[in-house]
Amino acid sequence: MSLDSMLTMLNTWLWQEKYWLPPGIRWQDTEMDNEEGRFPLPRDLLIALPLAFAFIILRYVFDRIIAIPLSKCLGVKDQIRIQAPPIPKLDAFYKHISREPSQSQVVSLGRQCGLSQRKIQTWFRHRRNQDRPSNTKKFCEASWRFVFYLVAFIAGLCSLIDTPWFWDQSECWRGYPKQPVANAHYWYYMLELSFYLSLLLSVSVDVKRKDFKEQVVHHIATIFLICFSYCANYVRVGTLVMLVHDSSDFLLESAKMLHYAVMTRICDSLFVIFAVVFLVTRLVVFPCRIVHTTMVVSMEFFEPFFGYYFFNVLLLVLQALHIFWAYLILRMVYKFVFKGVVERDVRSDEESEGDEQEEEPEGERNSAERKETINSKRTSLANNCVLNNLTNQRNLNSRLHEIK
Image 1 (cartoon, rainbow, N blue to C red):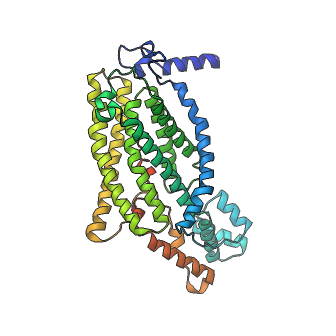
Image 2 (image 1 turned 90 degrees about the vertical axis):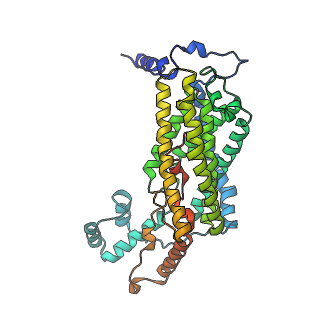
Image 3 (image 1 turned 60 degrees about the horizontal axis):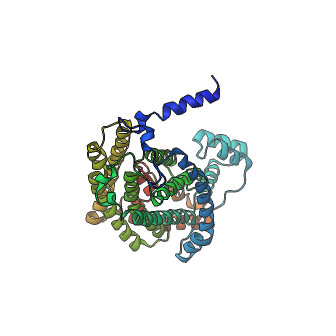
């Protein structure tokens, strides 16, 4: 069987009407005249790839022209870290075998390099600290996401506020699947898809957190969900889902920026606002409006089919994650308000800083190392901001992920 015939068979199987359309509806029934508007077609998604590269270039320019100067104006400070001396054997081991050698490996490396175990351990600690992202880099990443989420939320709200389905969610299904897509909603979809695709393409150079693998899976799942909802013409309800999640994303990213600038009081206030918006949108608006209309109201307009079940299962998984993260937020708020203690982030977004908190015996620490320890303790005090308990919504959307 030739490659062309295999691709033809795959294409025929993938686009079977029973997967994408309600019973009794054929692809011919979705055709529209130019006057009626645009019907979502898979080929429309191809524009997302060049847009994703454009986002990457724009982000590079944004960091240098806006984010870095802004971080300096806000007083974002980076730790002074001791540079590990160049030792070829240790460098090779660090890059190709392990960043944290076992005790037996430390002994072996000490013999090869003629160094004590303590010096080997110190070298690896300093080398790991060299690779940790600076506060400036984390600030730039947060500010870039803040700008995008804020612009996306405002643009999405402006494009949806005059639509009938923004106020009455049953309108998401009236006339489905033959529903034209306005240009504003098309670009809303394409820009959201392109943004997440750009995050996936740049994940290797972004701040690597303890949930690196989960973030990759999250970005892939988000891209897949956006593509599926577009091809199935769930654009109306899809725009509402994206708007709900964008409404709290920019609040958290702005609070993270202030966290890195050690503006604790404003940071804490933004966290409270974020918590309220998150709880209202994810535990009230999302289940009572969006999930209800996709599971219950939609059945008044068409019979269930594969796309109906698939889409609703994804929304229910998303809602389960909303409940989980809401529980963590409420627990942190309770301890902060009633007990006066700030709980460390139980999620995996915060970079592990254990190495930076290590201390060596006084006799083996030089003046530069003392300075590094003082910086570490200052950072530890600064991290008592409430935001440290909830530093990254991409997990929040990440394990969830909001269907965007």
